[in-house]
Length: 322
Ligand code: AMP
Ligand code: MG
Image (cartoon, rainbow, N blue to C red; front, side):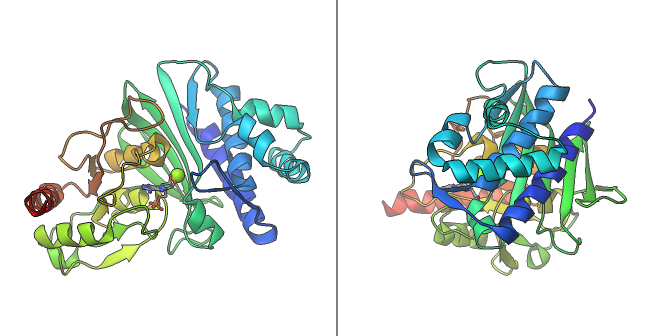
Protein backbone atom coordinates (compact mmCIF):
# COMPACT_ATOMS: atom_id res chain seq x y z
CA UNK A 1 0.00 0.00 0.00
CA UNK A 2 1.19 3.50 -0.81
CA UNK A 3 0.75 5.74 2.23
CA UNK A 4 2.03 8.85 0.41
CA UNK A 5 -1.45 10.38 -0.13
CA UNK A 6 -2.22 10.05 3.58
CA UNK A 7 1.17 11.46 4.55
CA UNK A 8 0.55 14.40 2.20
CA UNK A 9 -2.89 14.98 3.74
CA UNK A 10 -1.46 14.91 7.28
CA UNK A 11 1.16 17.47 6.21
CA UNK A 12 -1.60 19.68 4.79
CA UNK A 13 -3.63 19.18 7.97
CA UNK A 14 -0.66 20.16 10.14
CA UNK A 15 -0.19 23.34 8.12
CA UNK A 16 -3.89 24.15 8.49
CA UNK A 17 -3.74 23.53 12.25
CA UNK A 18 -0.69 25.76 12.61
CA UNK A 19 -2.47 28.46 10.68
CA UNK A 20 -5.59 28.25 12.87
CA UNK A 21 -3.47 28.15 16.00
CA UNK A 22 -1.50 31.26 15.09
CA UNK A 23 -4.19 33.37 13.53
CA UNK A 24 -7.57 32.60 14.95
CA UNK A 25 -8.19 29.93 17.46
CA UNK A 26 -11.86 29.08 17.65
CA UNK A 27 -13.10 26.76 20.35
CA UNK A 28 -16.56 25.32 20.63
CA UNK A 29 -18.02 22.96 23.12
CA UNK A 30 -18.85 19.61 21.61
CA UNK A 31 -21.85 17.79 23.16
CA UNK A 32 -20.15 17.50 26.55
CA UNK A 33 -17.06 15.64 25.34
CA UNK A 34 -14.26 18.16 25.28
CA UNK A 35 -13.38 21.10 23.07
CA UNK A 36 -13.35 21.08 19.28
CA UNK A 37 -11.95 23.76 16.99
CA UNK A 38 -12.32 24.55 13.32
CA UNK A 39 -8.90 22.92 12.87
CA UNK A 40 -10.47 19.55 13.82
CA UNK A 41 -12.91 19.85 10.92
CA UNK A 42 -10.32 21.17 8.50
CA UNK A 43 -7.84 18.40 9.25
CA UNK A 44 -10.46 15.64 9.06
CA UNK A 45 -11.83 16.93 5.75
CA UNK A 46 -8.34 16.95 4.20
CA UNK A 47 -7.55 13.41 5.38
CA UNK A 48 -10.93 12.02 4.32
CA UNK A 49 -10.62 13.68 0.91
CA UNK A 50 -7.35 11.77 0.44
CA UNK A 51 -8.96 8.49 1.52
CA UNK A 52 -11.86 9.03 -0.86
CA UNK A 53 -9.51 9.79 -3.75
CA UNK A 54 -6.94 7.04 -3.14
CA UNK A 55 -8.64 4.30 -1.14
CA UNK A 56 -12.28 4.31 -2.25
CA UNK A 57 -14.16 1.40 -0.80
CA UNK A 58 -12.33 1.49 2.54
CA UNK A 59 -14.36 2.64 5.51
CA UNK A 60 -13.63 5.37 8.02
CA UNK A 61 -14.07 5.87 11.74
CA UNK A 62 -13.44 9.51 12.59
CA UNK A 63 -14.07 11.76 15.55
CA UNK A 64 -15.96 14.60 13.86
CA UNK A 65 -18.98 14.63 11.56
CA UNK A 66 -20.57 16.79 8.88
CA UNK A 67 -23.67 17.18 11.03
CA UNK A 68 -21.65 18.57 13.95
CA UNK A 69 -19.85 20.91 11.57
CA UNK A 70 -23.15 22.32 10.35
CA UNK A 71 -24.76 22.45 13.80
CA UNK A 72 -21.90 23.64 16.00
CA UNK A 73 -19.93 25.96 13.75
CA UNK A 74 -21.24 29.40 12.84
CA UNK A 75 -21.63 30.15 9.11
CA UNK A 76 -18.79 32.66 9.13
CA UNK A 77 -16.37 30.19 10.69
CA UNK A 78 -17.51 27.44 8.32
CA UNK A 79 -16.66 29.74 5.42
CA UNK A 80 -13.27 30.36 6.97
CA UNK A 81 -12.40 26.69 7.31
CA UNK A 82 -13.73 25.91 3.83
CA UNK A 83 -11.35 28.59 2.57
CA UNK A 84 -8.41 27.09 4.49
CA UNK A 85 -9.14 23.62 3.11
CA UNK A 86 -9.26 25.09 -0.39
CA UNK A 87 -5.91 26.83 0.24
CA UNK A 88 -4.38 23.54 1.39
CA UNK A 89 -5.72 21.66 -1.65
CA UNK A 90 -4.86 24.42 -4.10
CA UNK A 91 -8.36 24.75 -5.49
CA UNK A 92 -11.78 26.16 -4.65
CA UNK A 93 -13.88 23.86 -2.48
CA UNK A 94 -17.50 24.17 -1.40
CA UNK A 95 -19.11 23.73 2.00
CA UNK A 96 -21.07 20.76 0.61
CA UNK A 97 -17.82 19.06 -0.41
CA UNK A 98 -16.40 19.60 3.08
CA UNK A 99 -19.49 18.10 4.71
CA UNK A 100 -19.29 15.08 2.38
CA UNK A 101 -15.58 14.57 3.18
CA UNK A 102 -16.23 14.82 6.93
CA UNK A 103 -18.73 11.96 6.66
CA UNK A 104 -16.88 9.99 4.01
CA UNK A 105 -16.76 6.23 4.56
CA UNK A 106 -18.52 6.34 7.93
CA UNK A 107 -21.84 4.82 6.89
CA UNK A 108 -20.57 1.48 5.63
CA UNK A 109 -18.27 -1.30 6.79
CA UNK A 110 -15.29 -2.61 4.88
CA UNK A 111 -12.33 -4.89 5.62
CA UNK A 112 -9.98 -1.89 5.91
CA UNK A 113 -10.91 0.86 8.34
CA UNK A 114 -9.12 4.22 8.58
CA UNK A 115 -9.37 5.52 12.14
CA UNK A 116 -8.89 9.28 12.36
CA UNK A 117 -8.37 11.70 15.20
CA UNK A 118 -7.85 14.93 13.25
CA UNK A 119 -6.60 16.87 16.28
CA UNK A 120 -5.79 14.64 19.21
CA UNK A 121 -5.06 16.58 22.37
CA UNK A 122 -7.28 19.55 21.54
CA UNK A 123 -6.66 20.96 25.03
CA UNK A 124 -2.94 20.88 24.26
CA UNK A 125 -3.57 22.45 20.86
CA UNK A 126 -5.53 25.30 22.45
CA UNK A 127 -2.91 25.84 25.16
CA UNK A 128 -0.08 25.85 22.57
CA UNK A 129 1.33 22.63 23.99
CA UNK A 130 1.47 19.31 22.12
CA UNK A 131 -1.11 17.75 19.80
CA UNK A 132 -1.18 15.10 17.10
CA UNK A 133 -2.91 14.50 13.78
CA UNK A 134 -3.52 10.79 13.77
CA UNK A 135 -4.59 8.30 11.11
CA UNK A 136 -4.52 4.57 11.82
CA UNK A 137 -5.44 1.69 9.54
CA UNK A 138 -7.23 -1.18 11.24
CA UNK A 139 -7.68 -4.56 9.55
CA UNK A 140 -9.38 -7.42 11.40
CA UNK A 141 -9.12 -5.46 14.63
CA UNK A 142 -5.35 -4.95 14.28
CA UNK A 143 -3.67 -1.56 13.75
CA UNK A 144 -1.58 -2.49 10.71
CA UNK A 145 -0.44 0.93 9.49
CA UNK A 146 -0.58 4.54 10.56
CA UNK A 147 0.47 8.11 9.95
CA UNK A 148 0.90 10.68 12.71
CA UNK A 149 1.84 14.33 12.56
CA UNK A 150 3.36 15.73 15.76
CA UNK A 151 3.92 19.47 15.17
CA UNK A 152 5.48 19.96 18.62
CA UNK A 153 7.86 17.00 18.49
CA UNK A 154 11.08 17.94 20.29
CA UNK A 155 14.30 18.68 18.46
CA UNK A 156 12.72 18.54 15.01
CA UNK A 157 12.16 21.96 13.50
CA UNK A 158 8.49 22.29 12.55
CA UNK A 159 7.65 18.91 14.08
CA UNK A 160 7.75 15.28 13.03
CA UNK A 161 5.76 13.10 10.68
CA UNK A 162 5.71 9.41 11.63
CA UNK A 163 4.41 6.51 9.65
CA UNK A 164 4.22 2.79 10.16
CA UNK A 165 3.97 0.26 7.41
CA UNK A 166 4.99 -3.35 6.77
CA UNK A 167 6.42 -3.74 10.24
CA UNK A 168 8.70 -0.70 10.31
CA UNK A 169 8.28 2.83 11.64
CA UNK A 170 9.66 5.95 9.97
CA UNK A 171 10.21 9.58 10.88
CA UNK A 172 10.62 12.65 8.71
CA UNK A 173 10.31 16.39 9.42
CA UNK A 174 6.72 17.47 8.69
CA UNK A 175 8.11 20.19 6.45
CA UNK A 176 9.91 17.55 4.36
CA UNK A 177 13.45 16.24 4.28
CA UNK A 178 15.25 13.00 4.89
CA UNK A 179 13.34 10.12 6.41
CA UNK A 180 14.86 7.63 8.79
CA UNK A 181 13.69 4.42 10.37
CA UNK A 182 13.05 4.60 14.12
CA UNK A 183 12.87 1.89 16.77
CA UNK A 184 11.82 1.54 20.37
CA UNK A 185 14.63 2.00 22.86
CA UNK A 186 16.72 -0.76 24.43
CA UNK A 187 16.86 0.89 27.87
CA UNK A 188 15.98 -1.37 30.80
CA UNK A 189 17.57 0.55 33.68
CA UNK A 190 14.64 1.80 35.82
CA UNK A 191 16.44 5.03 36.73
CA UNK A 192 17.01 5.81 33.04
CA UNK A 193 13.52 4.83 31.88
CA UNK A 194 11.60 7.88 30.68
CA UNK A 195 7.90 7.81 31.55
CA UNK A 196 5.10 9.66 29.73
CA UNK A 197 1.63 10.47 31.01
CA UNK A 198 -1.26 12.82 30.13
CA UNK A 199 -1.17 16.47 31.13
CA UNK A 200 -4.87 16.66 31.94
CA UNK A 201 -5.67 15.16 35.30
CA UNK A 202 -9.24 14.43 34.27
CA UNK A 203 -7.83 12.09 31.58
CA UNK A 204 -5.84 9.79 33.85
CA UNK A 205 -5.35 8.94 37.52
CA UNK A 206 -2.05 10.55 38.49
CA UNK A 207 -1.95 9.02 42.00
CA UNK A 208 -2.74 5.55 40.72
CA UNK A 209 -0.08 5.80 38.03
CA UNK A 210 2.51 7.07 40.52
CA UNK A 211 1.80 4.09 42.79
CA UNK A 212 1.92 1.64 39.87
CA UNK A 213 5.29 3.06 38.80
CA UNK A 214 6.54 2.71 42.34
CA UNK A 215 5.34 -0.88 42.57
CA UNK A 216 6.99 -1.59 39.20
CA UNK A 217 10.33 -0.35 40.52
CA UNK A 218 10.20 2.82 38.43
CA UNK A 219 9.94 5.35 41.27
CA UNK A 220 13.17 7.03 40.16
CA UNK A 221 12.25 7.12 36.47
CA UNK A 222 11.94 10.66 35.06
CA UNK A 223 8.32 11.61 34.30
CA UNK A 224 7.20 13.90 31.48
CA UNK A 225 3.59 14.95 30.96
CA UNK A 226 2.58 15.67 27.40
CA UNK A 227 -0.74 15.86 25.60
CA UNK A 228 -1.89 13.63 22.80
CA UNK A 229 -0.84 10.50 20.99
CA UNK A 230 2.63 11.99 20.61
CA UNK A 231 3.31 9.78 23.64
CA UNK A 232 2.98 6.69 21.41
CA UNK A 233 5.28 8.24 18.80
CA UNK A 234 7.94 8.88 21.43
CA UNK A 235 7.85 5.23 22.51
CA UNK A 236 8.02 4.06 18.87
CA UNK A 237 10.99 6.35 18.22
CA UNK A 238 12.98 5.33 21.29
CA UNK A 239 12.54 8.73 22.96
CA UNK A 240 10.79 7.25 26.02
CA UNK A 241 10.33 3.81 27.57
CA UNK A 242 6.85 3.89 29.14
CA UNK A 243 3.54 5.56 28.39
CA UNK A 244 1.06 4.66 31.09
CA UNK A 245 -2.65 5.48 30.96
CA UNK A 246 -4.76 4.39 33.90
CA UNK A 247 -8.15 6.10 34.20
CA UNK A 248 -9.20 7.86 37.37
CA UNK A 249 -10.55 5.24 39.76
CA UNK A 250 -14.13 6.50 39.48
CA UNK A 251 -14.07 7.01 35.73
CA UNK A 252 -16.24 4.81 33.58
CA UNK A 253 -15.60 6.77 30.40
CA UNK A 254 -14.68 4.32 27.66
CA UNK A 255 -11.47 4.84 25.68
CA UNK A 256 -12.06 6.16 22.17
CA UNK A 257 -10.65 4.01 19.37
CA UNK A 258 -9.33 7.06 17.48
CA UNK A 259 -7.22 8.07 20.50
CA UNK A 260 -5.11 4.92 20.18
CA UNK A 261 -5.22 3.22 16.76
CA UNK A 262 -2.52 5.23 14.97
CA UNK A 263 -0.31 5.25 18.04
CA UNK A 264 -0.57 1.50 18.52
CA UNK A 265 0.39 1.00 14.85
CA UNK A 266 3.55 3.12 15.30
CA UNK A 267 4.57 1.34 18.49
CA UNK A 268 4.06 -2.14 17.05
CA UNK A 269 6.07 -1.24 13.95
CA UNK A 270 8.82 0.32 16.06
CA UNK A 271 9.22 -2.91 18.01
CA UNK A 272 7.54 -1.69 21.20
CA UNK A 273 4.46 -3.07 22.89
CA UNK A 274 1.01 -1.57 23.57
CA UNK A 275 -1.48 -3.60 25.60
CA UNK A 276 -4.38 -3.37 27.96
CA UNK A 277 -3.51 -3.15 31.67
CA UNK A 278 -3.57 -6.95 31.98
CA UNK A 279 -1.28 -7.52 29.02
CA UNK A 280 -4.01 -8.48 26.53
CA UNK A 281 -4.00 -6.82 23.10
CA UNK A 282 -5.82 -3.49 22.78
CA UNK A 283 -9.32 -3.94 21.41
CA UNK A 284 -9.72 -2.15 18.08
CA UNK A 285 -12.55 -4.32 16.80
CA UNK A 286 -15.46 -2.88 18.73
CA UNK A 287 -16.27 0.41 16.99
CA UNK A 288 -15.86 3.95 18.27
CA UNK A 289 -15.13 2.90 21.84
CA UNK A 290 -12.73 0.22 23.00
CA UNK A 291 -15.35 -1.76 24.86
CA UNK A 292 -13.18 -4.08 26.90
CA UNK A 293 -10.13 -1.88 27.40
CA UNK A 294 -9.35 -0.67 30.94
CA UNK A 295 -6.21 1.35 30.27
CA UNK A 296 -2.97 1.32 28.33
CA UNK A 297 0.51 0.08 29.05
CA UNK A 298 2.83 1.13 26.24
CA UNK A 299 6.52 0.34 26.47
CA UNK A 300 9.69 -0.40 24.54
CA UNK A 301 8.75 -4.05 25.06
CA UNK A 302 11.67 -4.79 27.35
CA UNK A 303 10.16 -3.32 30.53
CA UNK A 304 6.60 -4.37 29.68
CA UNK A 305 6.21 -7.31 32.07
CA UNK A 306 7.75 -5.30 34.89
CA UNK A 307 5.19 -2.52 34.38
CA UNK A 308 2.28 -4.97 34.08
CA UNK A 309 3.34 -6.50 37.40
CA UNK A 310 3.32 -3.04 39.02
CA UNK A 311 -0.15 -2.29 37.64
CA UNK A 312 -1.43 -5.66 38.86
CA UNK A 313 0.03 -4.97 42.32
CA UNK A 314 -1.80 -1.61 42.32
CA UNK A 315 -5.09 -3.34 41.46
CA UNK A 316 -4.52 -5.82 44.30
CA UNK A 317 -3.90 -2.99 46.75
CA UNK A 318 -7.01 -1.16 45.55
CA UNK A 319 -9.13 -4.28 45.98
CA UNK A 320 -7.81 -4.89 49.46
CA UNK A 321 -8.46 -1.25 50.39
CA UNK A 322 -12.13 -1.44 49.39
P1 AMP B 1 -4.12 12.88 26.37
O1 AMP B 1 -3.59 14.18 25.95
O2 AMP B 1 -3.17 11.73 26.20
O3 AMP B 1 -4.74 12.89 27.74
O4 AMP B 1 -5.23 12.45 25.35
C1 AMP B 1 -6.19 13.32 24.86
C2 AMP B 1 -7.46 12.54 24.67
O5 AMP B 1 -7.96 12.13 25.93
C3 AMP B 1 -8.57 13.32 24.04
O6 AMP B 1 -8.59 13.12 22.67
C4 AMP B 1 -9.82 12.75 24.65
O7 AMP B 1 -10.52 11.93 23.75
C5 AMP B 1 -9.33 11.87 25.77
N1 AMP B 1 -10.07 12.12 27.00
C6 AMP B 1 -10.84 13.16 27.31
N2 AMP B 1 -11.40 13.00 28.55
C7 AMP B 1 -10.95 11.83 29.02
C8 AMP B 1 -11.16 11.10 30.21
N3 AMP B 1 -11.94 11.57 31.19
N4 AMP B 1 -10.55 9.90 30.34
C9 AMP B 1 -9.74 9.44 29.36
N5 AMP B 1 -9.48 10.09 28.22
C10 AMP B 1 -10.09 11.26 28.03
MG1 MG C 1 -8.31 12.48 20.76
